[in-house]
Image (cartoon, rainbow, N blue to C red; front, side, top):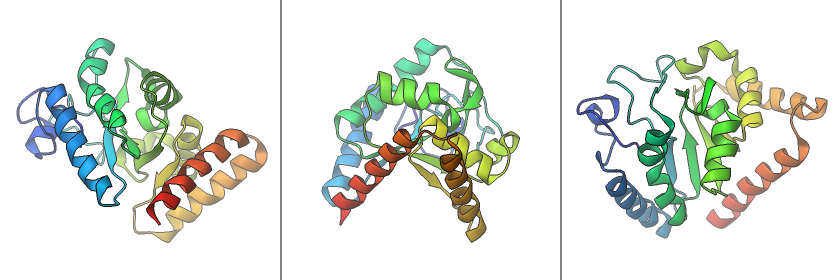
Length: 208
């Protein structure tokens, strides 16, 4: 958990889901934790990119839409800062937030936004590992259609893995069918899709 909380008792602090308020310290502690995990053969996941530390106490993306309205400079200097450390430490996966960050994309949650995933995470920070969504059934995604719509939008944004965690087999089936149809129709770029599969395959091979 690399969220840097900015206000005591806000969402990240109240739930004790943050290493602290200092981005450098969060990056240091988070990187040490992920290095220990990966040293034991566990692929660590850093979340929630580009940072949920500015969310108020009642702003929970599991329950409904959340908008994190911080300036771009602050988002990069605080929210994204620990990810630079984590990437340098070799983190294998990064999970995107379902909050909307108007400084980067005023219309889509981070995990559905090419500007956030391909622009900030891969382009600006240089992350080459596996991207993974947060729970696909999250309340924050209610305005973005059903599971199939969300799955395709996430793949278009650059997400490699989709977290279907609703304990309903149909959820994964809907996502799979929608992705296959979008790939066959040409809506999803085949080269990008193949690259995502290759990243996931490489991760799996390293864990065998």
